Image (cartoon, rainbow, N blue to C red; front, side, top):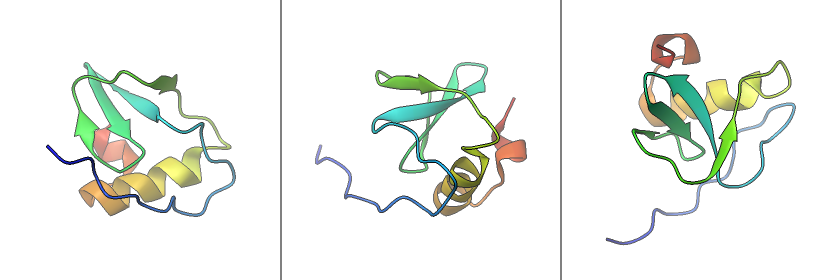
Length: 72
């Protein structure tokens, strides 16, 4: 399997550390590339006011859904 292509991060107030993933609940994670995965081996990240714009744009780009639709 080839590694995913590099994706420029969407604009936001603060960009999380590389390799971070947002915990959505119920064992699901939103990666920085916009994919929802059930296992994540990188940095754990929680949603904060500073990272909200970044994760919202990532969710829309990768899943076509807002963060509120993805969080369990």
